[in-house]
Image 1 (cartoon, one colour):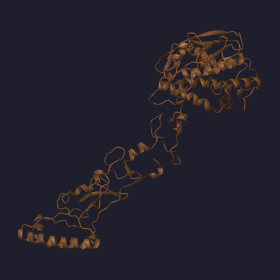
Image 2 (image 1 turned 120 degrees about the horizontal axis):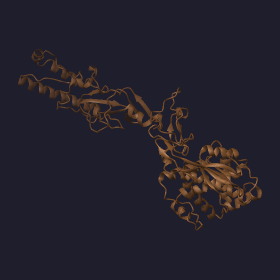
Image 3 (image 1 turned 90 degrees about the vertical axis):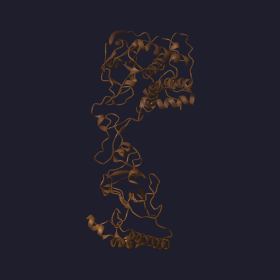
Image 4 (image 1 turned 45 degrees about the horizontal axis):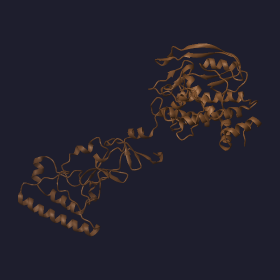
Length: 493
């Protein structure tokens, strides 16, 4: 709801009239009749009767039948004269409630917890219609608000449907709300601490919002060490704890469902991506080792690598060209409380047999993110093995990101073109098992987020390079783009 349409009212407008000078002539004349009536009853009861000038009209009939009949005739004559006079002046008559039920309404009702209400006396028929029940208000208490009228019990909150009895309430257009209900509807809540996002010193509601997941949260959570998922980047909610991976990273429960934890678990995915390359006539002949490693082992391998480009601030994969000893994860850890325990590692000596020594990938990431990293690093290996030399960072990282994006697209986009694999190895069955539709909605959503990350990367090499490479591939196709890169070291324009 737009804030410009929001109005707050401390109390509704009050309608009704009890001023003596506003009485019709016939009611003034009627008052004189009753004042001259049964004075004996007035004395014996010890109180004076209430007349039309008061909020509640109450009268008592005298005991004398003859006097009563005479007064009734005089009353009827007075009403007829007044009706005729009013008809000549205004063109309509008056409605008289003779039931007496409203006249006997107790006075303490006006002093209840309701907002101050007016009292409806004799009004023309249809003069006041309740906006809630669409019935005539008639004789009794009523509430007037923003040009509309309500029975007290019909003035209700649009959100919860309960009667509004507080003196202060909120309005949006013609709809009325309890202040608490209106705040619940319009004031954003933090999706981390689940409290109303506070108003800053300028009187504005300031919050942060994730560009893909639309997670709204208080700005303070960016500074109070709230955990962030290393995969999907969502902040940890106070009522849904994340799993610590033991190296400064945390993983949310949704990403944990498809996380790959050791080298053995990753082998089928690795072979399926090699088949994907082969299906595009980009066969990788050498058997390049692939290892799943911890964060510390990956950082040590980066320091020992003389060449190559690395994504800052977080590197998740590496295509090695140098001989190194790398500690890989041999047995997956298990979840123990909020941590992973029981991990078994193994140091492995990597010997250079070709331009590529090994491909390293960070452990503990969801299957689709792990696959996207593998597709990217395999493209680095393919370029080196096929003799692509001295490429700029923008060109090499850009085309590798395109292959990563294309693989994700075949996994999560239902109408993407299937690329048939020419391999007859046992890993081809893995490809069929991981085709579109075999994954859950949560995993597909994660895949679209990883594609969103690639498209919106702000770094010059990974982001700018991808957009330039993708534009060239869309215009000329992948094969012609690769041929142009091989000849010129740049993208075709």
